[in-house]
Amino acid sequence: MTTNKNHTVIYTGVTSNLVNRIHQHKTKFNKGFTSKYNCDNLVYYKEFTNIIEAIKYEKTIKAGSRAKKEKLINETNPEWKDLSDGW
Image (tube, rainbow, N blue to C red):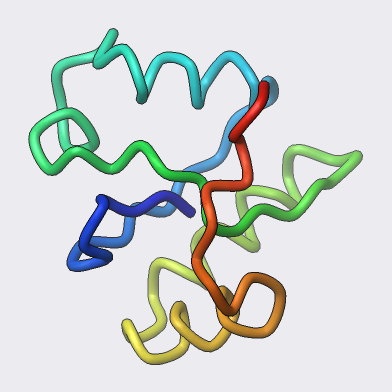
């Protein structure tokens, strides 16, 4: 999950290359939701070995409320630090 600097927007996505995808968000490579709302701070991620399971998990998160997304982030990253700093 990524967010903007004020944490007002949370974006959930799935990728096979997290480092590359975060770079794309930060450079606004793709013109879309994340570039429009400046969602380039990585605040939560989960790794999978199976893309089908990853997509299933992503759909579950997307279907959940903002409060559920915030709970996931707060459990592992309570300060909402950008986990991609230094990549």
